[in-house]
Image (cartoon, rainbow, N blue to C red):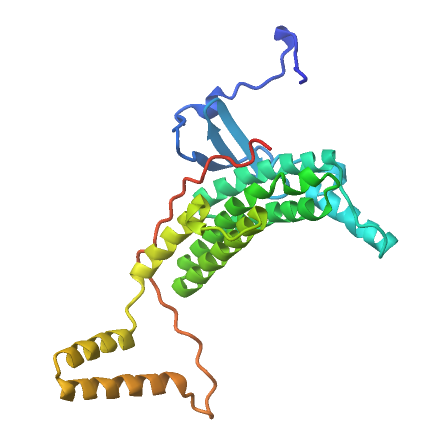
Length: 299
């Protein structure tokens, strides 16, 4: 650990008390805001119990360029591409324990930023930053020289997949695409199930995953707002008519169901297929913006 000390009379440090005035820390909540920095660029400030964390909105959150690259991940991927061009079918590219540690530290920065972006409603940025962390996990799993390092970060994957799925779903809901939102959530749920099963080497009950439960609850919230399929309503009426032996009404309902199914399955050959109609919701589900505790704190 290195401690920076200066003579008190010549201190060039900046007191951040003014930046915290009127902005109290709220335990259990993600307290975040967006500001314009002295350089004219937008920045994100995350309120912590002992102060605040300030991050750039693009590039690496701390603004640094390791090895003169956009990020540590970018540097390692460049190394990998250069190695593979040079060696082709030779031994696979590998990264050291120190490389994995640097990537892990970088993923923690991106974690803080994508959680902040989620609270701010910038879902496109959440998708971008979660993909960055997924690429880090993929690189470590396939290229780490130390066997332990190949799996040391894998327990973070469900959280990253969950946040990316939520961001994709929320972006779709903002545009009224409830069907697409459901598809994104189900896709993330399937990926979480696959990665947990892969790490445990056996089928698992996805309900034991906190990340999976968050997605399943959100899926149920959206499904409750979807309009009922008219064919389902007619089928329920048909079942009741049959139970009460009202066969005349049952026959009429059956004809309506058959006619509706025929209209849905047949397209006019002289006309192009019409695009699927969007289903809009005036009050889309409001997913919980409080993510799980920082999963990047410890190895």
